[in-house]
Length: 91
Image (cartoon, rainbow, N blue to C red; front, side):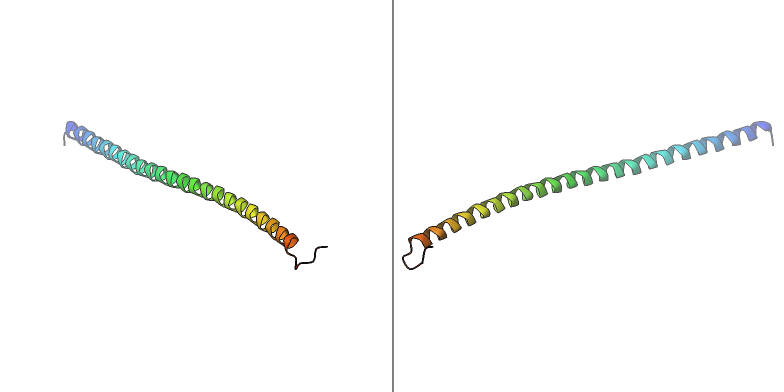
């Protein structure tokens, strides 16, 4: 075979290898972009869950505080009732 045929074959092989490398890079970039999007969604979901948990914790603290206040009022009312009740001995 002539030299120019070998040169042409080498050029074609190099072009095919170049195309394969570019295609592989693009596929990898698409895969990475998909993972970035998935990570973003997971972060958003996590942040939303954290916000809801903080809100629930705040509500629980408020409810506990209200319960303590209600208990104190009930104890005060019970003491007052014991003071007022003529059938209960006051010491």
